[in-house]
Length: 225
Ligand code: CA
Image 1 (cartoon, rainbow, N blue to C red):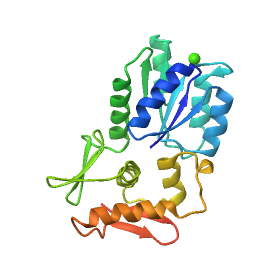
Image 2 (cartoon, rainbow, N blue to C red):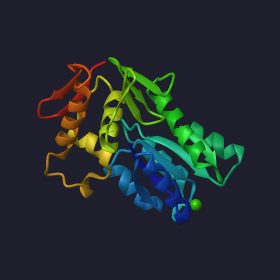
Image 3 (cartoon, protein in one colour):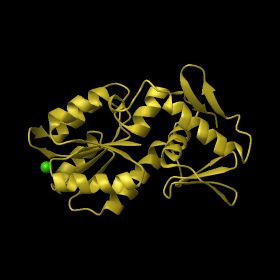
């Protein structure tokens, strides 16, 4: 999943980056409101971690801009030193998914991100059952019965993204954006997405037939559950 960190405190931004990268997230940074705006017009993010006090404006303005773009599903978690109840209420009323007051623990941030994913995808727990396969979002594991399937980080991310967005055709571009981040930075003329999907399918197919994992010709992929 891709995350945009909108934060002008460089140290904190890097700390979050390091922590979430280890969890398999793809990270982009914006230190100013203007940079963040440019980015949200080009890319969609699974998460936007939003500081309110930015050098060239207020994070709330960015939240409004985002919420005025039709069809956006980016989850927003506000990170701010402003702990006032009024700000917290305003953030949530304006469409943020959660709010963390600085300083916060990175583990709490991650737990809240998992909670946002569960709410957004209407999951009761961090595990999703897919025709005998078990996808554990929290521990980033896929198992079949007792057996653990040895996926690479990217293979897990692909499976995770397709399962969360089940029954929807996910285009190659969309998948690339969410798994690899800014598509402009990725060598997009190769069919590297297909290579990763092929390897993922192969690893799953060792355990069971996977007719539910569909390649939609010339568009992308869909997991039918
Ligand atoms: Ca700030």
